Amino acid sequence: MNLFKNFNLDKLKDGLSKTRAKLLNSLNETISGKAFIEEDFLEKLEEILISSDIGFDVADKIINQTRIKLKNEKDRSDTNIIRIVKEKLITIFEYENYSPNEIIDLKIKPYVILIIGVNGVGKTTTIGKLANNIRNSGLEVIVGAADTFRAAASEQLNVWAERAKVKIVQKPGGDPSSVAFEAITIALEEHKDVVIIDTAGRLHNKSNLMEELNKIKRVISKKIPNAPHETLLVLDGNTGQNAIMQTEEFSKVTHITGLVVTKLDGTAKGGVIFQICDKLKIPVKYIGVGEGIDDLQNFDSKAFVSAIFEN
Image 1 (cartoon, rainbow, N blue to C red):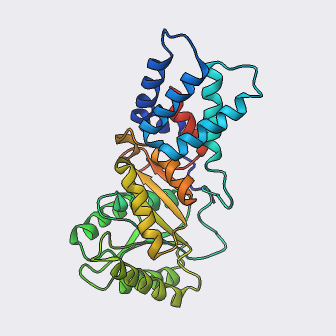
Image 2 (image 1 turned 30 degrees about the vertical axis):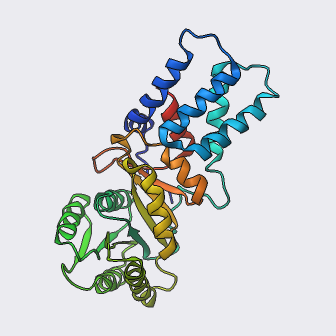
Image 3 (image 1 turned 120 degrees about the horizontal axis):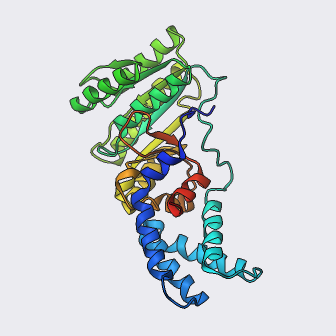
């Protein structure tokens, strides 16, 4: 089920304006008033891709694929080269089982979504925005505030739950798994369609994190077999390379079914999404392109590449 009827390409472009400005300014400097030499342009283009946080490995692969494609092209202008690069960037997201837009299986009720990620990445706001989008699609939602270690987390989530007009289960300072259990129990009793469960953003070490997540999963699965049905990792687009490290670390302790990349409107590092998908083959399902409650959009690879390259 696609929850994002409010997808707006103009809003996406606005949200990626800093990433696009950095890339286009560099391209314009390369093209403007200079004699065109194909290989020099390709090398400069590779540098530009790397500087936009697309990364060396991805940029090198894309430029090599472009060189191969150009051998069969009559048009070797800078415009056509950029067109080919854009096509090749889109293919990064075309790996097996990549289905970013379909998150909720309506045959499963309640459908359980577990949200993970370190503190400060926008996890709380993501939950609020996601709950809002799900409710606007006509489904009943309940949120479980299982990040009980930070009082502020529960308070912030309560504010977002009120904005999204969804029910929330809270036990500040209590056991996270008991919050998850209660949220699931209420969802079953009240015939809710979706349960979104927050988790602690930071624990003392990996074994502690694994133990806590596994405990929550065990409790959930006792009530609903095979739950959680989605485990979404929230990443801050501003962190660039660190977002890749976070994904790798969380992948060691739990199975991640999708990524949410937030705060893309405040960074020129939007290219990190290409690195994550190329290296880890985990689909980006949502991106945050603003602070408003409607500013969480489904990830569309073609629209994303277009928004980076085109004014």
